[in-house]
Image (tube, rainbow, N blue to C red; front, side, top):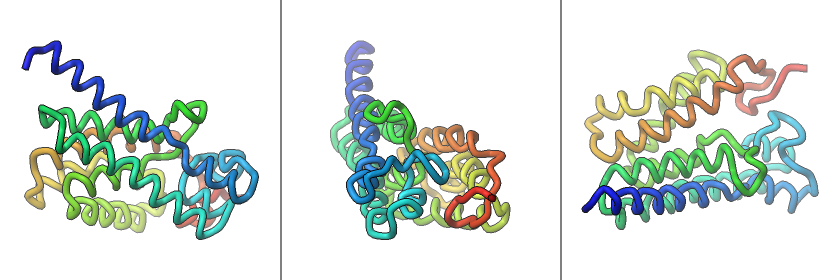
Length: 202
């Protein structure tokens, strides 16, 4: 495959990832159920937890599943149809980036955890379980969910290597994990009242 063809394919799969990630389900679902913009209150992010806070359990569950799916779908397609393996990592990273900075919602989106989970499910389901375990463990240890998410994004690939997960799994973990880590830096100094709901002190 020529360099030109590689660029064309990488661009196409990258755009697929970004467009899928850009569907702002938290914004749409919360608006549908409560006639409000989920980004106007709470954490100000279009996330599952903020949907739970603004609209309740059922809308939040819908958002969670849809946010996972928009990472899973483009990554699965890239795994099966991308001509080169490294394009899978690009697809996954841009799906997460699309969720965080969505074209369809003025680039004000979520934080990327659920979409990253979908990417990991597509490439290796066991990696999703490990990643979730890392996030929960670090959150309990650090007692600050944003900082725990930053360290989780950085730690995913090294921990996967320890568990013998290599190849596309570690590349996807590296690419999407770094996007998540960068995104959560915005909340590094956020204060929390109820850690599991990511709420600010009042």
